[in-house]
Amino acid sequence: MQPGDLVEITRASIGIPKNTIALIVKASTHFDGDCAATDRSYTMFHVYLLNGRGRRYLPQDLRKINENR
Image 1 (cartoon, helix red, strand yellow):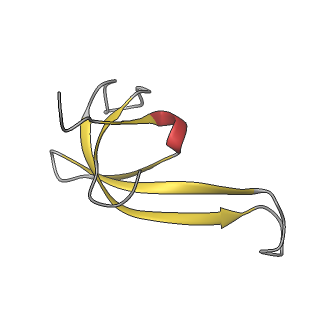
Image 2 (cartoon, rainbow, N blue to C red):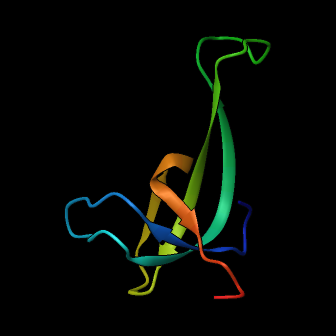
């Protein structure tokens, strides 16, 4: 997944039902600990929902929408 992809949110949260469609606008990598040299890193996706609100999700909470659907 990368910025510009349409995704479906696979985990419901307060105010955001499961299967809501969103657009990825930014992907950022975060590191656990003080140093970027650690193996413990994760990616956080910043998405905009169809109602204009922004949220952040982990990759396991998103599913890319296939263009050939």
